Length: 134
Image (cartoon, rainbow, N blue to C red; front, side, top):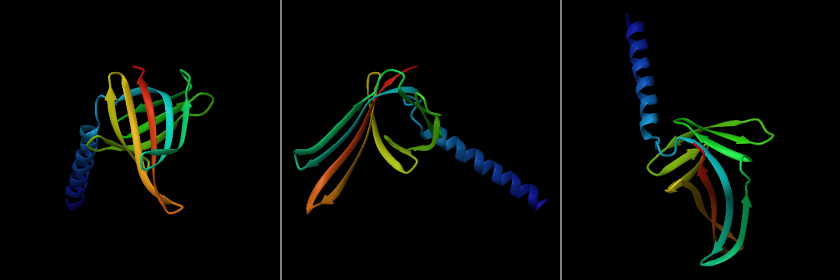
């Protein structure tokens, strides 16, 4: 009797937990997105110290956002599935948390971190610009 009750409670807990994951994901984010540009920028105050942009061709790299994961497809490579979770305007992919915003059919993921380099506070920003495929 106790095992049956424990099993029932555990099942309800797991189902409720998975429902919360789906409730937190942003429906506008769901689906396939073509990666257009990845940018890495380092700033010392308003001065750009370093900037790198990598552009991607159509079909070269895409991301598919689901309720619990991100599937990354890169031409010539096997697809990678990485755990994802959602917060208020944020997505955590593996251990990296990104802010996200939309502009029409475009998606911007961004992440910033301040690091101390040679006695200066450097703001490092990583951004991914996507276009909706579906």
